[in-house]
Length: 447
Image 1: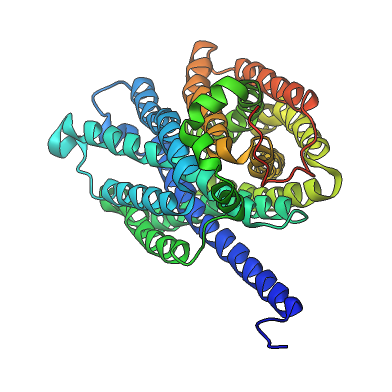
Image 2: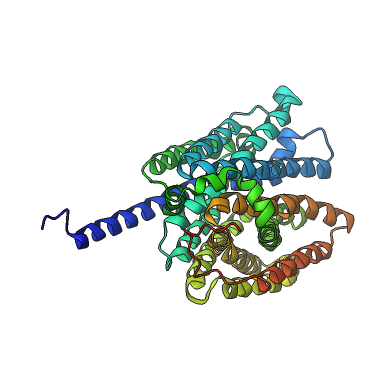
């Protein structure tokens, strides 16, 4: 018998190829997601500290901060449209090619942000260009985030989907660390004038390197087995209108997952965007110390994301999510009292715990969303749920927090009430959901 005809050898070759594609898929997804979060971490940090003066100086301090944070939200507001369009294309034409387009658009938008003139140089054109680039970036992000998740999860073996999901979950805190480290070093090494004139631009321009790496890796990845199975079985005809499929057959699932992720999305942006503003403006913490505290918190978030994904493979998605949601509720209640205590050590600990347990849930989110939809509607349904939650609570949370803090004369308890309510809603949505750990991703059941 020839080597080529030996079924055992052929099976081993198929298995080796499958493992190779899985590793490439998670690498490509990780780099693309890292670029996505690196850009958003940079923007969130400078939107809370520098952009009010550079792009919105004609307003009073509170209004300029709100306007700057609103530009941050504009990117998230564009995500659902990108999710709908990219999700439909991804369910009809496949995941791989669309991922090359979205990561390119995201990287180009970030690079151009690093070249923007300020309000002092070109007037109202400066914030107009800033918001325009944010909208373009957010549109691409609406398709990129979910597409990267599906590329990794659909290539993974059934017993390692949670782990791969957790690996994607580390991209956000890792990028937060890199972004805040870059800003911390630049703020420390440069004078205030140099940092505000050109220093903040350097990390935006440097993100171009991640863009090139992401494109290179993704060109080496094949289409996912789940989509290939759909194509082979003639399922693309059913995917001609994936948005219609979601709206007609899976709207309850999409709504439930959206409401679930409203909690983690709001808490995430409360910690990584608003907290920096609260620490520096309300508590008098130096910017460098604020960047350092966020870096430490994101180290804890990396551990949390990996732990969430790993644990979900062992005890199931639902039980692991319930644990994470309960822990974030506890952190929500004690967060501001500890920040107000003024101890750097205690602040570091509570920020690390809060962000760690929030990212614990985000490490499970990709695999839970993927397992909740059939192949022909998976991209669209997952993207709508993920982007919808970020639109409803993630992006607005820093703005709402600033407004509530101002309305209640510096008291954070209104913020705690809002975030606690969202956390309870999230916990309820997990509780009423079914377990999905043993779901076959190659399934195609619309009716």
